[in-house]
Length: 275
Picture 1 (spheres, one colour):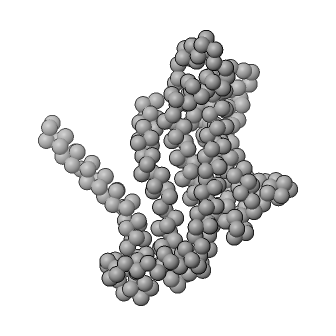
Picture 2 (picture 1 turned 90 degrees about the vertical axis):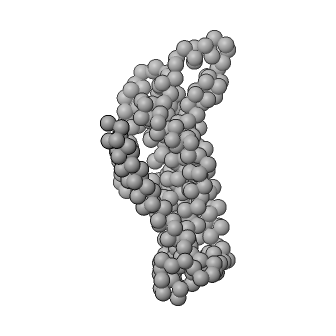
Picture 3 (picture 1 turned 135 degrees about the vertical axis):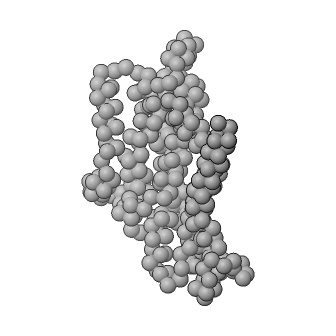
């Protein structure tokens, strides 16, 4: 049994190693070729660069003005994370701990909206934002993301908040806590893992999304990095090293978020498995 268990562990380790390499390889390929010139890239795509040439990065920052698009994406992503977190926590507390007529039906209706593809709601959202004069504005795209992200956030947080003991909330009421104090002094600390996990997912999804910004943002001044990247790929179609440099730069923020928040992702996955 011990020998069989060791063989199984080795097999699992090998499979996980292969899976890890398959995920890391695109990053390695982009990083490797972003320091090459066009000629060197076509000579050997998989060789190490002869010299670490930074000309591709200089083009991205000086000519393509990538920092402007990074700022647009960052402002949109942070706004979505903040508003989705605040509204999601308040709504999830109501669905999980408050009893009112029609709460089950309202919760079911909210969950059912998650089944509607984004392509179906794009035209109505565009029409509404056009009437409000919010096309080509950060406010408009943030509203679109809120409408799309809130149902899943509320469902995740509601499932987590239901596991919090009602006795703790009653004790807070006895101690004189009002409605919002019970949320921020009891619910938020105990549901911190789920809240942070939801924030991470929303940041990564908003940063990587291409569909909604392509429709709602046509002006260069407000384009997000993913929309700008699609323009980069078409503009520099004959310069693959510039394309790979843009892709590498675009991936850096999400990698940083994961590096600093991976413990919450692990906790959140473990929490969901236990439940």
